[in-house]
Image 1 (tube, rainbow, N blue to C red):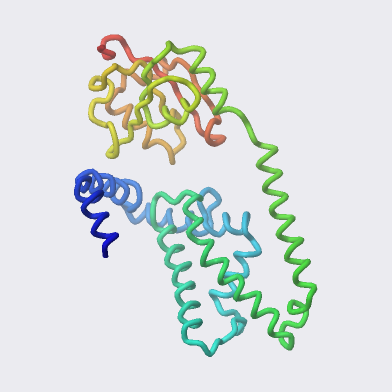
Image 2: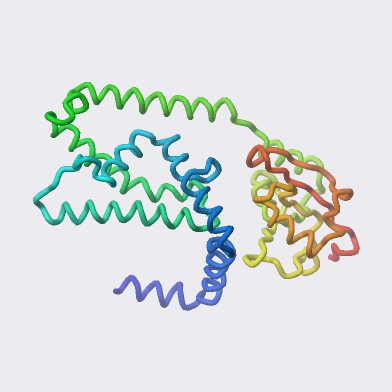
Length: 290
């Protein structure tokens, strides 16, 4: 109670207006689907899709743990030990609910990047351990799996999967973000002000001043005209990929002449993902007032 009181007095109440605005953005604009069609798309992609599918991600990066956890969740053929301890039964039910609830939430919402899946791993690890314990304790029904041969088999599978995705990551590792940062430092005036959602991410190692602009979240009230010192360049996701169009639409709607393709000064392809294209646009002197 004392900790909650300190939080409420020191952090929440002084910032409750801003916290409410930010939470509203994440709930209304980024998470909650706005149509049944979007909901259906989210469920299909969230369960089995390759871009953001939970099954595809866990099966690719944690297949052994994921499989063992699924066995524990399903209770396949009575695999799990039926403990006589009420607390252990309650823990298993809680862990099952943890996984299934998160799975349902991530399948429904619009935005569920893979970093969110870290929330699965504590429950998944415990359930996988329960499955291993059950496999070792049931030699009559699962004699082969319950033998000592199971350990090297699982270890070999685990090593194969991790060696594969680590080597794949190393083979496709690039320096495009670093190169984009250096290009900006070499070709733009010193102390230039850059605005746009991706501007801070491309200016980690230079001395430009960056202002993030995200619709409904931050700095979406006349950012070009209002900020001082005046912005000189706009950096935005500049691609026609359907999933990313929402970032381009705000600029096309509010500054259509500024982000005309003919005015594009430079592009940075494949910086974040293979299909991401970042465009750089100069701000006209008429708008860039000191």
